[in-house]
Length: 199
Image (cartoon, rainbow, N blue to C red):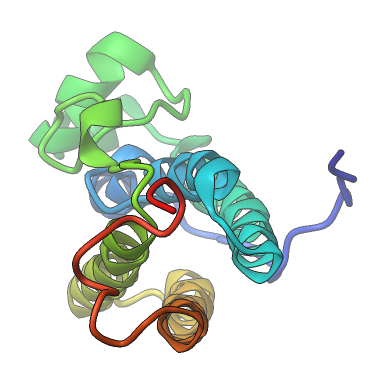
């Protein structure tokens, strides 16, 4: 059971509407390396993890990713809530989004493609899933790096930097999780079988 705290992990107070920034940042809501996929990936993978420490790790990070999803949604909402028609017309990427979603927060890539569960892997194989998680955190960090290269508003930059830092921490924690698994397995076999299924 989860408890919801009605407070963002990092405060967000964006003063200037910016549809161009919103059309980029939306990718971390529902893009291929975004927070929606991350949270569902980890909360789904936890069921087949053979060790309590790994179940706890995936639950902790999966729930935190839901908090990050809320932060990205808040950023996109604040960037789009007071737009003028001219601002929309002057930003073709956001104009296309606006036609379908007005200023609603919809899980989509920056390129406009809708979110798909096909962007996340849940294999039931402990080693495969943890390696997927390491890669996922690096891809999310890379996306935040790219966002930081494209925006210049400090009201956007600071929460994005916070989220980027959390991706680095998650990467480190998944590395610890992989070490837990390999320490518990026969060193000759940990790439040769699924410890959660093959006994």
